[in-house]
Length: 144
Length: 144
Length: 144
Length: 144
Image (cartoon, rainbow over all chains, first blue to last red; front, side, top):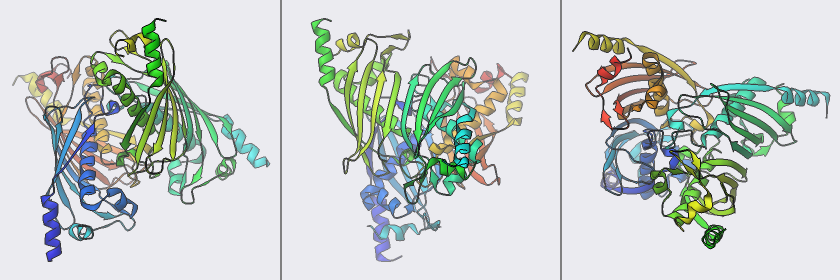
Protein backbone atom coordinates (compact mmCIF):
# COMPACT_ATOMS: atom_id res chain seq x y z
CA UNK A 1 0.00 0.00 0.00
CA UNK A 2 1.41 3.39 -1.01
CA UNK A 3 1.96 6.31 1.34
CA UNK A 4 -1.06 8.05 -0.17
CA UNK A 5 -3.25 5.02 0.38
CA UNK A 6 -2.15 4.72 4.00
CA UNK A 7 -2.94 8.39 4.50
CA UNK A 8 -6.37 7.99 2.92
CA UNK A 9 -7.14 4.95 5.03
CA UNK A 10 -6.09 6.74 8.20
CA UNK A 11 -8.16 9.78 7.35
CA UNK A 12 -11.23 7.64 6.79
CA UNK A 13 -10.71 5.75 10.05
CA UNK A 14 -10.16 8.97 12.03
CA UNK A 15 -13.23 10.81 10.73
CA UNK A 16 -16.22 11.15 13.05
CA UNK A 17 -19.40 12.56 11.55
CA UNK A 18 -22.40 13.77 13.43
CA UNK A 19 -25.62 14.98 11.86
CA UNK A 20 -29.18 15.57 13.01
CA UNK A 21 -32.56 15.26 11.38
CA UNK A 22 -36.16 15.83 12.39
CA UNK A 23 -38.65 12.99 12.43
CA UNK A 24 -41.42 13.65 9.90
CA UNK A 25 -45.08 12.72 10.35
CA UNK A 26 -44.87 10.34 7.42
CA UNK A 27 -41.93 8.54 9.06
CA UNK A 28 -44.26 7.26 11.78
CA UNK A 29 -46.73 4.41 11.51
CA UNK A 30 -49.81 3.25 13.39
CA UNK A 31 -47.69 2.36 16.42
CA UNK A 32 -47.14 6.16 16.61
CA UNK A 33 -43.38 5.73 16.45
CA UNK A 34 -41.02 5.73 13.49
CA UNK A 35 -41.51 2.69 11.25
CA UNK A 36 -38.47 0.44 11.46
CA UNK A 37 -37.64 0.79 7.78
CA UNK A 38 -37.10 4.53 8.19
CA UNK A 39 -34.03 4.07 10.39
CA UNK A 40 -32.33 2.92 7.20
CA UNK A 41 -33.07 6.26 5.69
CA UNK A 42 -31.75 7.99 8.82
CA UNK A 43 -28.39 6.27 8.75
CA UNK A 44 -28.28 6.75 4.98
CA UNK A 45 -28.31 10.46 5.81
CA UNK A 46 -25.46 9.75 8.22
CA UNK A 47 -23.54 8.20 5.33
CA UNK A 48 -24.31 11.17 3.08
CA UNK A 49 -23.13 13.57 5.78
CA UNK A 50 -19.94 11.56 6.38
CA UNK A 51 -19.16 11.53 2.68
CA UNK A 52 -19.91 15.21 2.27
CA UNK A 53 -17.18 15.85 4.83
CA UNK A 54 -14.68 13.73 2.89
CA UNK A 55 -15.47 14.22 -0.77
CA UNK A 56 -17.51 17.40 -0.87
CA UNK A 57 -20.80 16.01 -2.01
CA UNK A 58 -22.10 12.52 -2.61
CA UNK A 59 -24.46 14.08 -5.12
CA UNK A 60 -21.47 15.13 -7.23
CA UNK A 61 -20.30 11.51 -7.27
CA UNK A 62 -23.74 10.39 -8.29
CA UNK A 63 -23.66 12.86 -11.16
CA UNK A 64 -20.33 11.41 -12.30
CA UNK A 65 -21.91 7.97 -12.20
CA UNK A 66 -20.36 6.67 -8.99
CA UNK A 67 -22.81 5.11 -6.58
CA UNK A 68 -22.51 3.33 -3.22
CA UNK A 69 -24.73 0.27 -3.09
CA UNK A 70 -25.37 -1.31 0.29
CA UNK A 71 -24.19 -4.93 0.55
CA UNK A 72 -25.13 -5.79 4.13
CA UNK A 73 -26.90 -4.17 7.04
CA UNK A 74 -27.35 -5.13 10.65
CA UNK A 75 -29.55 -3.03 12.91
CA UNK A 76 -30.29 -3.45 16.58
CA UNK A 77 -33.26 -1.41 17.71
CA UNK A 78 -33.10 -0.12 21.29
CA UNK A 79 -35.72 2.62 21.53
CA UNK A 80 -38.31 4.33 19.37
CA UNK A 81 -38.27 7.81 17.94
CA UNK A 82 -41.50 9.71 17.50
CA UNK A 83 -42.80 12.78 15.68
CA UNK A 84 -41.19 15.88 17.15
CA UNK A 85 -37.93 14.11 18.02
CA UNK A 86 -34.63 15.03 16.50
CA UNK A 87 -32.45 12.07 15.64
CA UNK A 88 -28.69 12.43 16.08
CA UNK A 89 -26.65 10.15 13.84
CA UNK A 90 -23.01 9.48 14.63
CA UNK A 91 -21.07 7.77 11.85
CA UNK A 92 -17.58 6.34 11.68
CA UNK A 93 -15.70 3.77 9.64
CA UNK A 94 -15.10 0.36 11.19
CA UNK A 95 -12.98 -1.15 8.46
CA UNK A 96 -11.93 -0.75 4.87
CA UNK A 97 -11.60 -3.68 2.54
CA UNK A 98 -10.48 -3.74 -1.07
CA UNK A 99 -13.97 -3.51 -2.48
CA UNK A 100 -16.01 -2.55 0.54
CA UNK A 101 -16.15 -0.17 3.46
CA UNK A 102 -17.92 -0.88 6.74
CA UNK A 103 -19.61 1.91 8.66
CA UNK A 104 -20.90 2.07 12.21
CA UNK A 105 -23.83 4.39 12.87
CA UNK A 106 -25.22 5.14 16.32
CA UNK A 107 -28.64 6.78 16.32
CA UNK A 108 -29.73 8.78 19.34
CA UNK A 109 -32.79 10.76 20.35
CA UNK A 110 -31.24 14.19 20.63
CA UNK A 111 -33.24 15.47 23.61
CA UNK A 112 -32.11 12.84 26.14
CA UNK A 113 -29.41 11.04 24.13
CA UNK A 114 -31.28 7.77 24.47
CA UNK A 115 -29.80 5.22 22.06
CA UNK A 116 -32.35 4.44 19.34
CA UNK A 117 -30.42 1.99 17.19
CA UNK A 118 -26.98 0.68 16.40
CA UNK A 119 -26.21 0.00 12.77
CA UNK A 120 -23.40 -1.70 10.91
CA UNK A 121 -23.50 -1.23 7.15
CA UNK A 122 -21.23 -2.49 4.40
CA UNK A 123 -21.11 -0.42 1.23
CA UNK A 124 -19.46 -0.82 -2.14
CA UNK A 125 -18.34 1.85 -4.56
CA UNK A 126 -19.52 1.20 -8.11
CA UNK A 127 -19.26 2.79 -11.52
CA UNK A 128 -22.93 2.95 -12.37
CA UNK A 129 -22.42 2.84 -16.15
CA UNK A 130 -20.10 -0.16 -16.29
CA UNK A 131 -21.45 -1.78 -13.08
CA UNK A 132 -17.80 -2.36 -12.09
CA UNK A 133 -16.86 -2.25 -8.44
CA UNK A 134 -14.17 0.26 -7.58
CA UNK A 135 -11.22 -0.22 -5.24
CA UNK A 136 -12.41 1.78 -2.26
CA UNK A 137 -9.04 3.22 -1.22
CA UNK A 138 -8.23 4.24 -4.81
CA UNK A 139 -11.61 5.88 -5.11
CA UNK A 140 -11.11 7.98 -2.00
CA UNK A 141 -7.48 8.76 -2.92
CA UNK A 142 -8.86 10.95 -5.69
CA UNK A 143 -10.53 13.15 -3.12
CA UNK A 144 -8.62 13.14 0.15
CA UNK B 1 -56.97 13.93 -36.92
CA UNK B 2 -56.51 10.66 -38.80
CA UNK B 3 -58.83 7.67 -38.51
CA UNK B 4 -56.19 5.88 -36.44
CA UNK B 5 -55.91 8.80 -34.06
CA UNK B 6 -59.67 8.96 -33.62
CA UNK B 7 -59.70 5.27 -32.88
CA UNK B 8 -56.90 5.61 -30.34
CA UNK B 9 -58.62 8.50 -28.64
CA UNK B 10 -61.88 6.60 -28.45
CA UNK B 11 -60.18 3.53 -27.05
CA UNK B 12 -58.52 5.59 -24.32
CA UNK B 13 -61.77 7.34 -23.43
CA UNK B 14 -63.70 4.06 -23.31
CA UNK B 15 -61.24 2.18 -21.10
CA UNK B 16 -62.15 1.60 -17.47
CA UNK B 17 -59.47 0.18 -15.22
CA UNK B 18 -59.97 -1.24 -11.78
CA UNK B 19 -57.22 -2.48 -9.51
CA UNK B 20 -56.84 -3.27 -5.82
CA UNK B 21 -54.03 -2.98 -3.35
CA UNK B 22 -53.50 -3.73 0.31
CA UNK B 23 -52.61 -0.98 2.76
CA UNK B 24 -49.18 -1.61 4.26
CA UNK B 25 -48.16 -0.85 7.86
CA UNK B 26 -45.64 1.68 6.61
CA UNK B 27 -48.38 3.51 4.65
CA UNK B 28 -49.98 4.56 7.93
CA UNK B 29 -48.85 7.35 10.22
CA UNK B 30 -49.37 8.30 13.87
CA UNK B 31 -53.03 9.10 13.16
CA UNK B 32 -53.28 5.31 12.53
CA UNK B 33 -54.65 5.89 9.06
CA UNK B 34 -52.89 6.12 5.71
CA UNK B 35 -50.73 9.26 5.44
CA UNK B 36 -52.21 11.59 2.84
CA UNK B 37 -49.15 11.44 0.61
CA UNK B 38 -49.63 7.73 0.08
CA UNK B 39 -52.88 8.17 -1.82
CA UNK B 40 -50.66 9.54 -4.60
CA UNK B 41 -48.88 6.25 -4.69
CA UNK B 42 -52.22 4.41 -4.74
CA UNK B 43 -53.54 6.26 -7.76
CA UNK B 44 -50.11 5.97 -9.37
CA UNK B 45 -50.73 2.22 -9.19
CA UNK B 46 -54.10 2.92 -10.84
CA UNK B 47 -52.27 4.67 -13.66
CA UNK B 48 -49.80 1.78 -14.00
CA UNK B 49 -52.66 -0.71 -14.13
CA UNK B 50 -54.56 1.38 -16.71
CA UNK B 51 -51.48 1.62 -18.90
CA UNK B 52 -50.68 -2.07 -18.55
CA UNK B 53 -54.10 -2.72 -20.07
CA UNK B 54 -53.39 -0.44 -23.04
CA UNK B 55 -49.70 -0.79 -23.77
CA UNK B 56 -48.70 -4.05 -22.07
CA UNK B 57 -46.35 -2.70 -19.47
CA UNK B 58 -45.42 0.79 -18.34
CA UNK B 59 -42.12 -0.72 -17.23
CA UNK B 60 -41.33 -1.55 -20.87
CA UNK B 61 -41.87 2.09 -21.77
CA UNK B 62 -39.60 3.16 -18.98
CA UNK B 63 -36.93 0.82 -20.31
CA UNK B 64 -37.27 2.43 -23.74
CA UNK B 65 -36.82 5.82 -22.09
CA UNK B 66 -40.43 7.00 -22.16
CA UNK B 67 -41.72 8.36 -18.88
CA UNK B 68 -44.96 9.97 -17.73
CA UNK B 69 -44.31 12.96 -15.48
CA UNK B 70 -47.20 14.34 -13.49
CA UNK B 71 -48.05 17.96 -14.28
CA UNK B 72 -50.96 18.62 -11.97
CA UNK B 73 -52.89 16.81 -9.27
CA UNK B 74 -56.05 17.57 -7.38
CA UNK B 75 -57.20 15.29 -4.57
CA UNK B 76 -60.28 15.51 -2.43
CA UNK B 77 -60.07 13.30 0.65
CA UNK B 78 -63.38 11.86 1.86
CA UNK B 79 -62.46 9.02 4.20
CA UNK B 80 -59.39 7.34 5.63
CA UNK B 81 -57.99 3.93 4.86
CA UNK B 82 -56.23 1.94 7.53
CA UNK B 83 -53.96 -1.09 7.85
CA UNK B 84 -55.86 -4.19 6.81
CA UNK B 85 -57.99 -2.36 4.26
CA UNK B 86 -57.89 -3.08 0.58
CA UNK B 87 -58.05 -0.01 -1.60
CA UNK B 88 -59.94 -0.26 -4.88
CA UNK B 89 -58.77 2.19 -7.54
CA UNK B 90 -60.96 2.96 -10.54
CA UNK B 91 -59.23 4.86 -13.31
CA UNK B 92 -60.51 6.42 -16.51
CA UNK B 93 -59.47 9.16 -18.92
CA UNK B 94 -61.24 12.50 -18.68
CA UNK B 95 -59.64 14.21 -21.63
CA UNK B 96 -56.73 14.02 -24.02
CA UNK B 97 -54.82 17.09 -25.10
CA UNK B 98 -51.95 17.37 -27.55
CA UNK B 99 -49.26 17.07 -24.92
CA UNK B 100 -51.22 15.90 -21.90
CA UNK B 101 -53.75 13.36 -20.74
CA UNK B 102 -56.08 13.86 -17.78
CA UNK B 103 -57.08 10.93 -15.60
CA UNK B 104 -59.82 10.54 -13.03
CA UNK B 105 -59.20 8.09 -10.21
CA UNK B 106 -61.77 7.12 -7.61
CA UNK B 107 -60.36 5.37 -4.57
CA UNK B 108 -62.63 3.17 -2.48
CA UNK B 109 -62.28 1.06 0.64
CA UNK B 110 -63.04 -2.34 -0.85
CA UNK B 111 -64.95 -3.82 2.10
CA UNK B 112 -67.79 -1.28 2.20
CA UNK B 113 -67.09 0.70 -0.99
CA UNK B 114 -66.75 3.90 1.03
CA UNK B 115 -65.21 6.60 -1.15
CA UNK B 116 -61.74 7.42 0.16
CA UNK B 117 -60.62 10.04 -2.33
CA UNK B 118 -61.30 11.51 -5.74
CA UNK B 119 -58.29 12.39 -7.85
CA UNK B 120 -57.76 14.28 -11.07
CA UNK B 121 -54.24 13.99 -12.47
CA UNK B 122 -52.65 15.46 -15.59
CA UNK B 123 -49.74 13.55 -17.06
CA UNK B 124 -47.32 14.18 -19.89
CA UNK B 125 -45.45 11.68 -22.02
CA UNK B 126 -41.75 12.47 -22.32
CA UNK B 127 -38.68 11.07 -23.98
CA UNK B 128 -36.43 10.80 -20.97
CA UNK B 129 -33.17 11.13 -22.92
CA UNK B 130 -34.06 14.21 -24.95
CA UNK B 131 -36.51 15.62 -22.35
CA UNK B 132 -38.89 16.28 -25.28
CA UNK B 133 -42.62 16.00 -24.70
CA UNK B 134 -44.39 13.55 -26.96
CA UNK B 135 -47.72 14.02 -28.70
CA UNK B 136 -49.93 11.82 -26.54
CA UNK B 137 -52.17 10.46 -29.29
CA UNK B 138 -49.19 9.64 -31.51
CA UNK B 139 -47.51 7.90 -28.62
CA UNK B 140 -50.50 5.69 -27.96
CA UNK B 141 -51.07 5.07 -31.66
CA UNK B 142 -47.91 2.96 -31.63
CA UNK B 143 -49.54 0.58 -29.20
CA UNK B 144 -53.28 0.49 -29.68
CA UNK C 1 -66.38 37.67 15.57
CA UNK C 2 -64.70 38.81 18.77
CA UNK C 3 -61.70 41.13 18.91
CA UNK C 4 -59.51 38.19 19.88
CA UNK C 5 -60.74 36.19 16.92
CA UNK C 6 -60.07 39.07 14.53
CA UNK C 7 -56.58 39.38 15.94
CA UNK C 8 -55.95 35.65 15.56
CA UNK C 9 -57.22 35.69 12.01
CA UNK C 10 -55.03 38.64 11.13
CA UNK C 11 -51.99 37.06 12.70
CA UNK C 12 -52.52 33.88 10.69
CA UNK C 13 -53.02 35.82 7.45
CA UNK C 14 -49.91 37.94 8.05
CA UNK C 15 -47.54 35.09 8.87
CA UNK C 16 -45.00 34.06 6.24
CA UNK C 17 -43.02 30.91 6.89
CA UNK C 18 -39.96 29.78 5.05
CA UNK C 19 -38.13 26.51 5.63
CA UNK C 20 -35.59 24.43 3.74
CA UNK C 21 -34.94 20.75 3.43
CA UNK C 22 -32.47 18.53 1.64
CA UNK C 23 -33.58 16.04 -0.97
CA UNK C 24 -32.77 12.50 0.17
CA UNK C 25 -31.67 9.65 -2.11
CA UNK C 26 -34.81 7.74 -1.27
CA UNK C 27 -36.98 10.70 -2.33
CA UNK C 28 -35.88 10.14 -5.93
CA UNK C 29 -37.16 7.50 -8.30
CA UNK C 30 -35.98 5.88 -11.51
CA UNK C 31 -36.47 9.15 -13.41
CA UNK C 32 -33.61 10.37 -11.16
CA UNK C 33 -35.71 13.23 -9.84
CA UNK C 34 -37.93 13.45 -6.78
CA UNK C 35 -41.02 11.23 -7.07
CA UNK C 36 -44.13 13.39 -7.32
CA UNK C 37 -45.63 12.02 -4.13
CA UNK C 38 -42.73 13.36 -2.10
CA UNK C 39 -43.64 16.99 -2.77
CA UNK C 40 -46.57 16.33 -0.43
CA UNK C 41 -44.14 15.49 2.28
CA UNK C 42 -42.14 18.64 1.49
CA UNK C 43 -45.08 20.98 1.86
CA UNK C 44 -46.21 19.00 4.91
CA UNK C 45 -42.89 20.11 6.40
CA UNK C 46 -43.83 23.65 5.37
CA UNK C 47 -47.06 23.27 7.33
CA UNK C 48 -45.19 21.89 10.35
CA UNK C 49 -42.75 24.80 10.23
CA UNK C 50 -45.57 27.35 9.86
CA UNK C 51 -47.41 25.87 12.84
CA UNK C 52 -44.25 25.68 14.93
CA UNK C 53 -43.99 29.44 14.51
CA UNK C 54 -47.58 29.97 15.67
CA UNK C 55 -48.23 27.33 18.29
CA UNK C 56 -44.77 26.19 19.39
CA UNK C 57 -44.86 22.67 18.14
CA UNK C 58 -47.31 20.68 16.07
CA UNK C 59 -45.96 17.61 17.84
CA UNK C 60 -47.31 18.98 21.14
CA UNK C 61 -50.76 19.25 19.57
CA UNK C 62 -50.49 15.72 18.34
CA UNK C 63 -49.65 14.59 21.86
CA UNK C 64 -52.76 16.35 23.14
CA UNK C 65 -54.78 14.53 20.50
CA UNK C 66 -55.26 17.36 18.04
CA UNK C 67 -54.47 16.52 14.47
CA UNK C 68 -54.73 18.32 11.15
CA UNK C 69 -56.12 16.09 8.43
CA UNK C 70 -55.79 17.21 4.84
CA UNK C 71 -59.12 17.67 3.04
CA UNK C 72 -58.02 18.79 -0.40
CA UNK C 73 -54.78 19.32 -2.28
CA UNK C 74 -53.94 20.84 -5.62
CA UNK C 75 -50.38 20.74 -6.92
CA UNK C 76 -48.97 22.16 -10.10
CA UNK C 77 -45.54 20.78 -10.90
CA UNK C 78 -43.21 23.17 -12.71
CA UNK C 79 -39.72 21.72 -12.33
CA UNK C 80 -38.01 18.71 -10.81
CA UNK C 81 -35.78 18.56 -7.77
CA UNK C 82 -32.97 16.06 -7.61
CA UNK C 83 -30.60 14.53 -5.04
CA UNK C 84 -28.27 17.22 -3.73
CA UNK C 85 -30.85 19.99 -4.10
CA UNK C 86 -32.20 21.95 -1.19
CA UNK C 87 -35.90 22.68 -1.42
CA UNK C 88 -37.14 26.00 -0.08
CA UNK C 89 -40.77 25.96 1.05
CA UNK C 90 -42.66 29.21 1.50
CA UNK C 91 -45.98 28.87 3.30
CA UNK C 92 -48.78 31.33 3.95
CA UNK C 93 -52.50 31.21 4.70
CA UNK C 94 -54.89 31.97 1.86
CA UNK C 95 -58.13 31.85 3.78
CA UNK C 96 -59.69 30.72 7.03
CA UNK C 97 -63.11 29.12 7.19
CA UNK C 98 -65.04 27.95 10.19
CA UNK C 99 -63.81 24.39 10.01
CA UNK C 100 -60.94 24.66 7.56
CA UNK C 101 -57.85 26.63 6.75
CA UNK C 102 -56.35 26.96 3.28
CA UNK C 103 -52.58 27.18 2.84
CA UNK C 104 -50.49 28.20 -0.15
CA UNK C 105 -47.04 26.65 -0.44
CA UNK C 106 -44.48 27.61 -3.05
CA UNK C 107 -41.61 25.16 -3.42
CA UNK C 108 -38.34 26.36 -4.91
CA UNK C 109 -34.97 24.84 -5.70
CA UNK C 110 -32.80 26.86 -3.36
CA UNK C 111 -29.72 27.19 -5.56
CA UNK C 112 -31.36 29.07 -8.45
CA UNK C 113 -34.81 29.79 -6.98
CA UNK C 114 -36.47 27.86 -9.80
CA UNK C 115 -40.11 27.23 -8.93
CA UNK C 116 -40.63 23.49 -8.41
CA UNK C 117 -44.30 23.38 -7.49
CA UNK C 118 -47.23 25.46 -6.33
CA UNK C 119 -49.53 23.89 -3.79
CA UNK C 120 -52.89 24.79 -2.32
CA UNK C 121 -53.92 22.64 0.63
CA UNK C 122 -57.04 22.67 2.78
CA UNK C 123 -56.65 21.35 6.31
CA UNK C 124 -59.02 20.67 9.16
CA UNK C 125 -58.34 20.65 12.89
CA UNK C 126 -59.72 17.58 14.61
CA UNK C 127 -59.88 16.11 18.07
CA UNK C 128 -58.41 12.72 17.37
CA UNK C 129 -60.19 10.96 20.23
CA UNK C 130 -63.70 12.21 19.53
CA UNK C 131 -63.14 12.67 15.75
CA UNK C 132 -64.89 16.05 16.12
CA UNK C 133 -63.80 18.91 13.91
CA UNK C 134 -62.67 22.01 15.77
CA UNK C 135 -63.49 25.61 14.94
CA UNK C 136 -60.19 26.73 13.46
CA UNK C 137 -60.16 30.28 14.83
CA UNK C 138 -61.11 29.09 18.31
CA UNK C 139 -58.38 26.49 18.17
CA UNK C 140 -55.73 29.04 17.30
CA UNK C 141 -57.10 31.56 19.82
CA UNK C 142 -55.78 29.28 22.55
CA UNK C 143 -52.27 29.80 21.29
CA UNK C 144 -51.87 33.17 19.63
CA UNK D 1 -43.53 -26.70 28.25
CA UNK D 2 -47.08 -27.98 27.94
CA UNK D 3 -48.33 -30.19 25.12
CA UNK D 4 -50.19 -27.22 23.65
CA UNK D 5 -47.06 -25.11 23.68
CA UNK D 6 -45.06 -27.84 21.98
CA UNK D 7 -47.74 -28.10 19.33
CA UNK D 8 -47.77 -24.35 18.80
CA UNK D 9 -44.01 -24.23 18.52
CA UNK D 10 -43.98 -27.07 16.03
CA UNK D 11 -46.69 -25.47 13.94
CA UNK D 12 -44.75 -22.20 13.78
CA UNK D 13 -41.52 -23.98 12.84
CA UNK D 14 -43.24 -26.04 10.15
CA UNK D 15 -45.03 -23.17 8.44
CA UNK D 16 -43.68 -21.92 5.11
CA UNK D 17 -45.18 -18.75 3.71
CA UNK D 18 -44.74 -17.43 0.23
CA UNK D 19 -46.11 -14.15 -1.06
CA UNK D 20 -45.48 -11.90 -4.02
CA UNK D 21 -45.58 -8.17 -4.57
CA UNK D 22 -45.00 -5.79 -7.44
CA UNK D 23 -42.24 -3.19 -7.31
CA UNK D 24 -43.71 0.31 -7.43
CA UNK D 25 -42.16 3.31 -9.20
CA UNK D 26 -41.75 5.08 -5.88
CA UNK D 27 -39.81 2.09 -4.49
CA UNK D 28 -36.96 2.87 -6.89
CA UNK D 29 -34.36 5.58 -6.53
CA UNK D 30 -31.94 7.39 -8.83
CA UNK D 31 -29.91 4.20 -9.28
CA UNK D 32 -33.08 2.97 -11.08
CA UNK D 33 -33.34 -0.01 -8.76
CA UNK D 34 -35.26 -0.46 -5.52
CA UNK D 35 -33.84 1.68 -2.69
CA UNK D 36 -32.29 -0.57 -0.05
CA UNK D 37 -34.66 0.59 2.66
CA UNK D 38 -37.64 -0.76 0.74
CA UNK D 39 -36.55 -4.37 1.12
CA UNK D 40 -37.53 -3.94 4.77
CA UNK D 41 -41.03 -3.15 3.66
CA UNK D 42 -41.00 -6.19 1.36
CA UNK D 43 -40.09 -8.64 4.08
CA UNK D 44 -42.49 -6.86 6.43
CA UNK D 45 -45.15 -7.94 3.93
CA UNK D 46 -43.70 -11.44 4.21
CA UNK D 47 -44.22 -11.27 7.96
CA UNK D 48 -47.79 -10.00 7.52
CA UNK D 49 -48.54 -12.80 5.08
CA UNK D 50 -47.01 -15.43 7.41
CA UNK D 51 -49.05 -14.16 10.33
CA UNK D 52 -52.24 -13.99 8.29
CA UNK D 53 -51.81 -17.71 7.69
CA UNK D 54 -51.43 -18.42 11.41
CA UNK D 55 -53.67 -15.95 13.17
CA UNK D 56 -56.11 -14.76 10.50
CA UNK D 57 -55.06 -11.15 10.26
CA UNK D 58 -52.25 -9.13 11.79
CA UNK D 59 -54.52 -6.13 11.41
CA UNK D 60 -56.95 -7.71 13.87
CA UNK D 61 -54.13 -8.01 16.40
CA UNK D 62 -53.22 -4.41 15.84
CA UNK D 63 -56.83 -3.44 16.51
CA UNK D 64 -56.68 -5.37 19.79
CA UNK D 65 -53.54 -3.47 20.68
CA UNK D 66 -50.99 -6.19 20.02
CA UNK D 67 -48.06 -5.13 17.91
CA UNK D 68 -44.84 -6.79 16.74
CA UNK D 69 -41.88 -4.45 17.05
CA UNK D 70 -38.68 -5.38 15.28
CA UNK D 71 -35.69 -5.84 17.59
CA UNK D 72 -32.94 -6.76 15.15
CA UNK D 73 -32.48 -7.09 11.41
CA UNK D 74 -29.71 -8.41 9.25
CA UNK D 75 -29.93 -8.13 5.48
CA UNK D 76 -27.52 -9.34 2.85
CA UNK D 77 -28.19 -7.83 -0.55
CA UNK D 78 -27.40 -10.05 -3.53
CA UNK D 79 -29.19 -8.49 -6.48
CA UNK D 80 -31.37 -5.51 -7.30
CA UNK D 81 -35.04 -5.43 -8.13
CA UNK D 82 -36.40 -2.86 -10.52
CA UNK D 83 -39.73 -1.39 -11.59
CA UNK D 84 -41.77 -4.06 -13.33
CA UNK D 85 -40.33 -6.90 -11.27
CA UNK D 86 -42.37 -9.04 -8.98
CA UNK D 87 -40.69 -9.88 -5.70
CA UNK D 88 -41.30 -13.31 -4.19
CA UNK D 89 -40.89 -13.44 -0.43
CA UNK D 90 -40.43 -16.77 1.33
CA UNK D 91 -40.76 -16.63 5.10
CA UNK D 92 -40.17 -19.18 7.81
CA UNK D 93 -39.38 -19.22 11.52
CA UNK D 94 -35.78 -19.92 12.54
CA UNK D 95 -36.26 -20.00 16.28
CA UNK D 96 -38.65 -19.08 19.05
CA UNK D 97 -37.48 -17.59 22.32
CA UNK D 98 -39.50 -16.64 25.35
CA UNK D 99 -39.97 -13.05 24.31
CA UNK D 100 -38.85 -13.11 20.71
CA UNK D 101 -39.28 -14.94 17.45
CA UNK D 102 -36.68 -15.03 14.69
CA UNK D 103 -37.76 -15.12 11.05
CA UNK D 104 -35.84 -15.91 7.89
CA UNK D 105 -37.00 -14.25 4.71
CA UNK D 106 -35.59 -14.99 1.27
CA UNK D 107 -36.47 -12.45 -1.39
CA UNK D 108 -36.38 -13.47 -5.05
CA UNK D 109 -37.05 -11.79 -8.36
CA UNK D 110 -39.99 -13.86 -9.51
CA UNK D 111 -39.19 -13.98 -13.24
CA UNK D 112 -35.82 -15.74 -12.98
CA UNK D 113 -35.79 -16.66 -9.25
CA UNK D 114 -32.58 -14.65 -8.76
CA UNK D 115 -31.95 -14.17 -5.04
CA UNK D 116 -32.35 -10.50 -4.17
CA UNK D 117 -31.74 -10.54 -0.45
CA UNK D 118 -31.55 -12.79 2.60
CA UNK D 119 -33.02 -11.39 5.78
CA UNK D 120 -33.00 -12.48 9.41
CA UNK D 121 -35.37 -10.51 11.62
CA UNK D 122 -36.11 -10.75 15.33
CA UNK D 123 -39.55 -9.60 16.44
CA UNK D 124 -41.23 -9.14 19.77
CA UNK D 125 -44.92 -9.30 20.63
CA UNK D 126 -46.07 -6.36 22.73
CA UNK D 127 -49.23 -5.08 24.33
CA UNK D 128 -49.29 -1.62 22.86
CA UNK D 129 -51.26 -0.07 25.71
CA UNK D 130 -49.16 -1.38 28.60
CA UNK D 131 -45.91 -1.62 26.54
CA UNK D 132 -45.44 -5.08 28.15
CA UNK D 133 -43.75 -7.78 26.13
CA UNK D 134 -45.77 -10.93 25.67
CA UNK D 135 -44.57 -14.50 25.93
CA UNK D 136 -44.48 -15.47 22.26
CA UNK D 137 -45.62 -19.05 22.61
CA UNK D 138 -48.48 -18.08 24.92
CA UNK D 139 -49.53 -15.40 22.48
CA UNK D 140 -49.69 -17.82 19.58
CA UNK D 141 -51.35 -20.51 21.71
CA UNK D 142 -54.48 -18.34 21.70
CA UNK D 143 -54.72 -18.69 17.95
CA UNK D 144 -53.26 -21.98 16.80
